[in-house]
Length: 213
Image 1 (cartoon, rainbow, N blue to C red):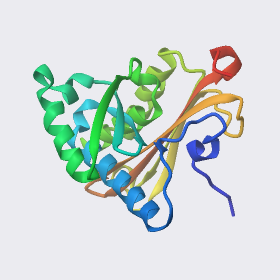
Image 2 (image 1 turned 180 degrees about the horizontal axis):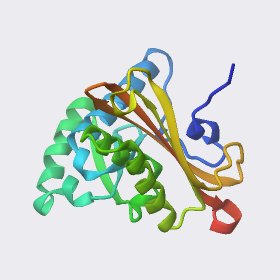
Image 3 (image 1 turned 135 degrees about the vertical axis):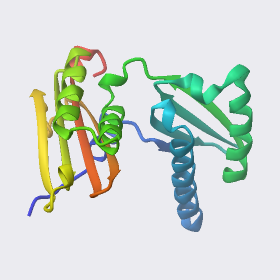
Image 4 (image 1 turned 180 degrees about the vertical axis):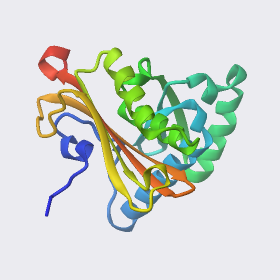
């Protein structure tokens, strides 16, 4: 049996920062974990068109700071910041405390594994060819400057009777190296034949070469 682990969880505390930064004890811990999950689900659903990569949540005594990393921040902000005001009020009701929302732009979405995975999943939901979707995604990521890219899709591909796994890759993607910056993303596509899972790995190169070591 293989021992599988989430590539980002494998690196948390070593080369990857925590996406939830707070401390709690006992029952309060479980409540806040559930609250974080609800906040992330709400933001991802509401701003699906904004291409949200990740959502970082930081809690202090009297305030929750939510930082959204998105390829299209204008969709979240709205005209003259009108969208942000309504969003902040709704999040304060969810969190039960004051909330501050920060927006950070993702400048190269083709290099972000989560956004690449969501893009491939979107093409599958629109009944696009899975081989073409994978090939285009790999080519775009490599052209953007990645050292390597790997995409796995699993499910009833093309409406087949039996589920299977297909993959496409280019360059080098070392899965066990902690001195290499590996980005990972996962998305699902709801098709007529069932759910198809999309996993993407993007190699940005060694931390020493990136100046982040």
